[in-house]
Image: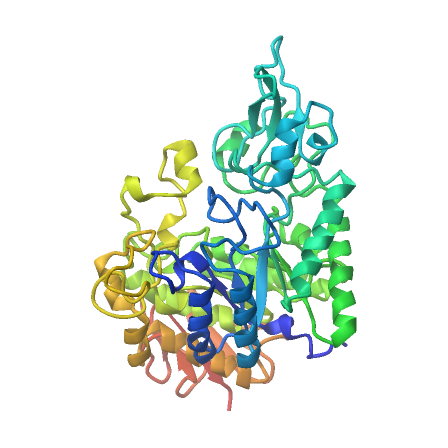
Length: 540
């Protein structure tokens, strides 16, 4: 039986999008000192740890997911001394710290890629990436028909050192993000060094970007369905994602983490961003010698429907929990439309219906077995900012496609902390720069000072749910048993008598348990489960 000392199995982790969390310098961009200043707020909320978005040196073509140096801090966010101060503060407050690591690709400004551009075709420097000759009599066509997840072809042609058009290089995201060639052993050795650099500084683990990526089909053949690849930002091209060799990388990384755990008894966590078609394939990444956990995105993408929610939860419990890992639930992140807007009808700046559903979904997630991740602002009930002007958009998807469809800036607008007007306490001083993305006027309603003062707020719902989750033995890790319910209602029992029920409809229904509930996402008289509401009960 696994020990309860594995903190990550039922942890609640708060995702900090550093550039939008809190600015300490007045330049309009959040930073590590701002994260450190916000730690008491997160301790009061009750989370177990934080995941920091990339803060490494980067030209910021994809907000830090284009890494130029994996072992330093971009001056935009601070320096290594500030990082060490952040680690010390987090340790004193009992907050774990996870770093975001990006092993699928780097920045076009990375020294190794610059070396590759200066080197000839066939050189060892180019072998660290995917360079290939073009097709056609003059090599002017890409080597294959793969599409970038950010729009357009997945290949860009270089100008050789002698000035002539030359080879092409692969980038499954933006051209400024060349993909590493993980079939080259130099890459694995380099990432071993990177992991150890940060583990030696005391971190508690890594969130792994594009964890189903890394390896590409060795022959780089054409895709059978390039149009499908082009229509989606999901990892659907089986020639570029979910190759079997990637599992050897996670075994190698797991062994490094366990080496550190054996030294001092502190668990280090590997949690992967795994986008694969089925829960069964997802489960292969969390086998006992691979990643500890992987985000289960099916709940995030499920429509507001009890049958859909029950299906994805059941599949996760069967296939993922069956490996010995625990499911890692998530409803929001820095790449997705926020739940308040996603569940709203229509999807505008947070209809009342969308807010009620988002509150209900939060209680459901916190009652599920396993771990949960909260994206910053989720605890405030922030809606998606859907009307940002074109001239402020920074998402490379918009730059590549010219389309606003599926852009991510709307969920990345800096947090409101206090006051009635932008910058809402996000950035200090009267002479400070404007926030890097503009905050709408209605953000005043969601500022943290107002949320903390209002016991009916999203913040208090999350805080109360987290406190009960930590205190009640029925919650966290464990089993789940579905209960019979009327149409439109989903209910399950955890452990010895904790019942969670969600009314997906808008009309009230009889409650599945008599008496007053322990916690509700909205007003619920005893014996009634209101529409678009979730509640917890303890059976007497």
